[in-house]
Length: 247
Image (spheres, rainbow, N blue to C red):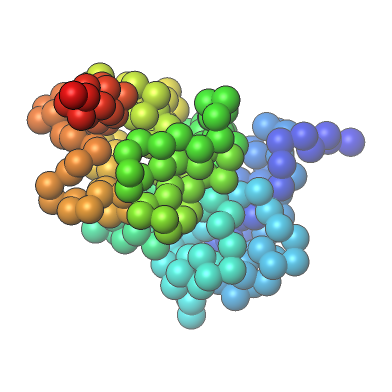
């Protein structure tokens, strides 16, 4: 009997050959796999069986993957990997904006898909936060590492798993420039290279919308053109402000 130790994965695709291919290879990796063949069936299986991850095709009859993802995000934060036969940037951006965690273009190898599944599940687990639960950046922004939330002017805002990992690594290296490739490796995984920089830009944009008073004039997350991103050195800023306030 095959042992399933890697979690429950829901595969949503209207092509039986594709679902068989994915099921067989993920079960070899130790996952338990269940199937749905359209968007409505997928929503019902998510409600009833609470999978750890969903792999969903974009091109499906009646309810396509984008619409199914939009409806899914109203009831669940389960991580989702979208599958598509197209590699258009517009489709990728649309999926990520609707709440997808990753995107894989058909045709793909079993090894590539398994690698992406592992990377997404790592991101959902999240890094261990610092000993203090809430880190105060300044008088308007704090980070609750236990709840994976930012507190902006007293309002709690939940972060998606990838947003949390990205903010965590930026804050952990506050004051230092984090190169694109370093952030991709730490946040998405070693499987992700320079061709995924658009993902990084998108999530920096999402974070800025959630924490910056004016995303077009960042106060916390700065772009180092051609290199990477830098989080404000808040401890140094605090020390300078305290020193300036001294008589």
